[in-house]
Image (tube, rainbow, N blue to C red; front, side, top):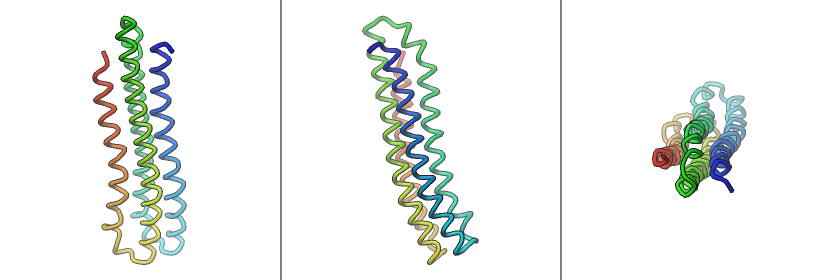
Length: 155
């Protein structure tokens, strides 16, 4: 495959897998949040944090994709051997962001829905339950940082 196609695959992987993780988390945690809100409407604003954090995962994939797209002219104008190495760096960055975004989405989905259910029973447990959701989000941030470091090494 040519370096430009490999680089475009990186863009696709970063944006698509992060978006898949985000939408799974939004569907799962959002549904649980809505169900919990019918029992106790006062907890809806607190339970919304899992949906907001899930959406951030898609934004991280989008940021990575934008950065990769800005590196496409650099990669295509390099000599063949350097372009191939740079393209594989881009692919690694896309895979890192995509997989970490997907994993974080799964974590937020399960932790966010459990948090919503627990808050129906005991709303005062929010501060303890939100830790799991935030730690799941941190996985995507780690992937974002590593992918940024990989992208910075291109060119």
